Length: 176
Image (cartoon, rainbow, N blue to C red):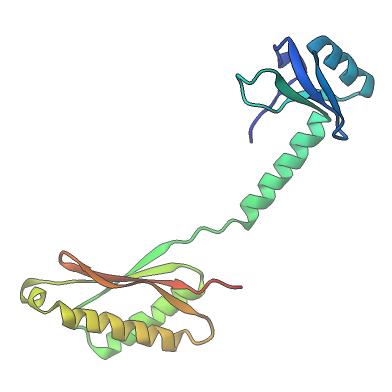
């Protein structure tokens, strides 16, 4: 949380003062601003970045402002979700049973809201036929879509080859 300069921490000679109701007092000396704040029982808070002349200050109850700010930050952290990228490794010579098992596992990951990176590492002579590996990844994606009928699966990145690796990224469909 960003801390504001308040009351005696403000060292400027003149400030542009704004009341708690939005009324602009104009550019006045800091002594006058402190007197106004003291009469109203409020704090002067500097709301402009350093180096701005004249500095803009606002009359507010700083304790209430900090409390509301902390409450908002806590609420934002509570609503924040972290998406993990899980990796599923396939093989260029994988059988259909293993593909279905891995697709079911992927559907569980996606149901929990995680992204999944499906990858195949081509070894030896398999590098001569990357099209077969791409077909395996596409079949795997089709099986994942069948397993995940109750919720949506999006192919965030289609199967692509980078060196010896072929990979695709699957993600849960964004809820509207």
